[in-house]
Image 1: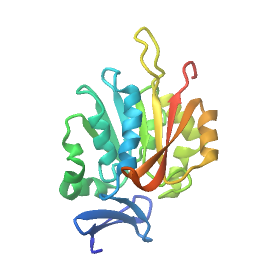
Image 2: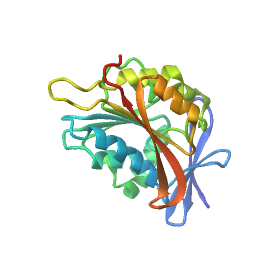
Image 3: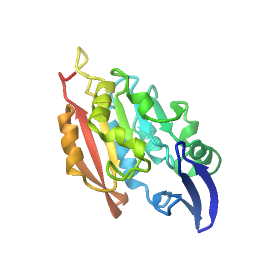
Length: 232
């Protein structure tokens, strides 16, 4: 596969964009595949499952951690109303440039949607310290809690990070009986210890398998963690 471009990762490392026939693949500098325009079903499922829980809430606010090839963002927009707002946080500026200039058509140009907001930086900065700001938080920044693209991302999946996500989600309830917020996490593999950490951080947890390519392709896992009512 021909190398098309490279993008430095803030803090160290590099992403590489390759052409694969009519498609594109993003790899780490060590050769490990991260994502491809050929297979993206589980990324779309991440957004579909989470947004189905909160789509009825007026003015839903959703945070997507990781732009990637745009499929999670696009699926979120497709499953939300016209008054929603979706903020996508992407650490690597080059990935945003690739989506704007080269890759956007694959996912339907979600960055051009008027409901999209782009934050070039760490998604953790939009989670930590927030209080009931988001209806849903979707994390697809690594290959899972035990498959980090960089060591600093461990704070997203540890107890402190999960408690911060819990606090950043809206509690729900009230006179309009709105649903509580949901945290959705994509992973290439199951991780029972992560499930336990979610449960211990105030979430009701579902583990949902998803295929990378429709009913075929690699098996991935999505944690759908709903904030428990009455928790702080």
